[in-house]
Every structure is written in structure tokens, then in C-alpha cells.
Image (cartoon, rainbow, N blue to C red; front, side):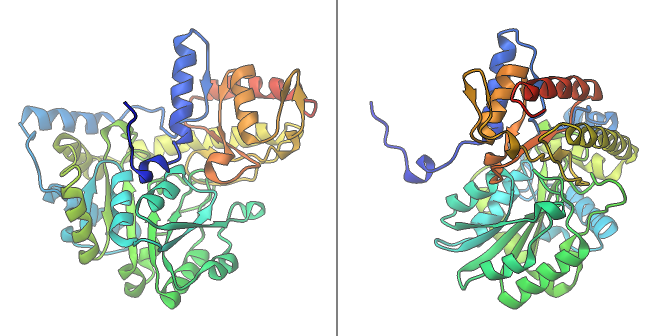
Length: 401
């Protein structure tokens, strides 16, 4: 039978990171020792107090449906966190808890974007933003960031990109894939632009706890009430608390927006896991020491990786100070060959490194940055050292390193 799938599904571009993860799994199943620098997932275990809270939720039979928006104590804890850490005030009815940060983000795009609306995307950007906009009938408008300035926002280019059809911008700071942390000055200028030109700001802040070398996260909604009214803040528990598999995140926004998000979610998944909600409540209200332990280890890995990359002939990597990614520029290797393998783009180079060195990296093409690779340092220092040795040896075969 020939299945007649919808056009919107046929037009989805598969996630490059998911495809890479699947290919790594296939190679490992064949007995090949693959080191993966591709996954955006902390290699630490979930802190014990959080896991125990999940077990307690099961023992106490907190296993029933909850409100679509999440349990009241968790929504209050999120409000407390936003006021304490980000200096922005919300009430529980302005919080929607979802399955990972991805679901509230998808819900927000569905709630705000009409057919034909334009959504600004500072690029490079996370692979799912473009597809989320397209699924809502919107038009992604790419606005490249400035690599030479650590992938900072190009505010002049953003203003030029605004049209009467501009409905929103999606920003991500600290950033996946670049690791950039947007400055308060740039975010204030962006907020001023949004207020002048009347568009929404969807701010994905899931990496906020992972900043280094004196950089700190700044929440754009904290600027003023006028700015806050047009913001949807997206955050979650996966990155800071090593809770990727728990699938918990949230949106914070004005009440009408959250009401629309909850209405949409009510017809899709209803509430997220009740057990994960109680674990997330403990994550916010319990001890926070584990965050600093993980952050310091990530910073040590960042410094090591940045140094190793910039020691390789033909590789240039700007120093970014957030998340757990670096994006080295590898354009010098385009046109080079090793045997019959000719490198034409970042996808070719990523495939070459996987085949030749058995190291998985994500091509910059996936993030709309074709001259670069994304390397995640959310793996052990031992794996980073071995993986970089393999990469350097493989690149030498191409004639530059």
C-alpha cells in the first residue's frame, strides 16, 4: 500500500543529532569503539536526592493524572526560582509544565504563530527551531550571528530582517550549538527592537546554569514589565540537573499565552509524568551543590577542548563560555582528500571523522553554519583526550594538520 502522508510531515527535515545518535548505536552494535562528541546530554547521573524524590512519589502513589499545567507545588517552585535566580516575577497560573523543554517551546510556537508569520532565528541555531516554525505554518528567517565576536547577536542585521509579517524571534542563551552567552547589553537592545516593532520573544534558557569564565546568564524578561509581557521563557531540568530522560521543562509567560499553551497541550499529551514532576520539585527546592560540581567539570573540559582544537593546523575555534559545546571552523579542509574520500562540506568531514577516526561530531550544516562542526564536551575528560587524538590523526591525513 502506498501511504499518503500529510505534506507538513513530508516537509520535516529529520533531526541530524538523532540520526547521528542512531548511527553511533549501529556502529557500536557491530563492536566498533566509537567516541561520541555528538550528544547534548550530561554524562553525570541525576543527583541522588532527585532520584529518591521520584522513588518516593511512586511509593506514595503520586501516579495519577495531574493538572495539564503541572502540580501546583512545582509551578510555585518555578515561580520562586524565576524570582530568585532571574529577578522576574510570575504567578503559578503563568507557568505551564511540559514533557521536556521541547514541548512547551513547541506549544508556544503553535500558540503564537499564524500561517505566513515570520519568525526570526539568529543562526546557527538548534535543529528543531526551524521545523517547529514550519509545522506552525510560519516562515523561518535566518539572521547569522557574528562568529568573530563569539557568535554574538548581529543587532543591525536583526533590525533589517524585521518586516510587517514578523511575529516573533526565538533566542537561545546560553546557546546550542555555539556555546555563546548573549550579553545584557545585546539583550536589552533586542528587547527595545521587539517593543518598537511589536513582536514576541521566545527565550530558550535551558542551559542557564552552565556558564564559565565570569559569564553569567541574563534573563531578557527581567528588563521591564513591557518586555516581560511579550516574552515566553522556556527552561527545563535536563541540562542543569542531568535529568534528560525524566523529560521535564516549562514555559513562563503572560496568562493568556499560558492559557493557550495549556489548551493545546491538553489535546496532545495532557500532563507530563507525575513522578517526574515530584522529582523536579526536589531539583528546585533541594540541595544545589551538584550544579556547581558539574559546572566546574564542564569548564575544565571546555578549556582543554578549546586549547586542543586551536593547536590543530587548519582549525580555528572561538572561545565561547556557555552550555557544553564548541563550534570549530573547519573550512580549510574543504577540497582536501584522503584516498578516495574528498571533503566538500562539514557533513563530509563529520562522516569522514566517524568512518576514519570513529569519533562522532555533528556537522554545522545541521545548525545552518556550514563551515563548522559542533563538538560536545558532555563526556569524560578521558574520552575527550582519546577522541581529540583520533581527530588530529585523521585530519593529518587530509594534508593540513
